[in-house]
Image 1 (cartoon, rainbow, N blue to C red):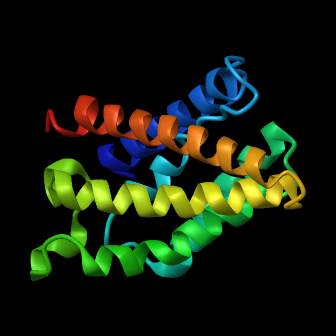
Image 2 (tube, one colour):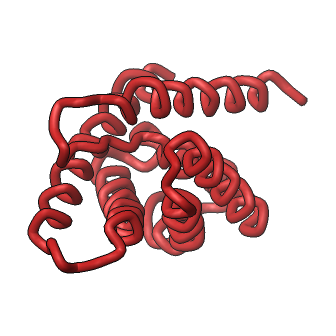
Length: 169
């Protein structure tokens, strides 16, 4: 394994630890559950094997399910995110031959394209997760409130990460 692989593994572990220890235990409001761990899936190389992407996303979601006791909601949300990711990447960013090996980031896609990419995929992830977590529409407005508040904070944290770590390269 080269240094880039070890760096990606370490970064993934740091994001998971931050999610499990800090963000999952954040007790500001019942409606707030910020989730930044989908950033791991969003940041994988553009030309990653689709089967490997689905397996990695499922494993990441399963780890989150184990630590969060959510019964598969994270695993399914991550798998759906990984399934739709190539479709969004195909419509965004540079399409020349050299663009296949790049990581989607603000630096590589540009602010507008990365914003579109992250908003749509994070929204889909959050919608799937919160619908599975509540497993009913009996309290529809509470579901929408949780979805909007959590998505907004999660997206802001993802963008802070992008501006802090990815734009320096």
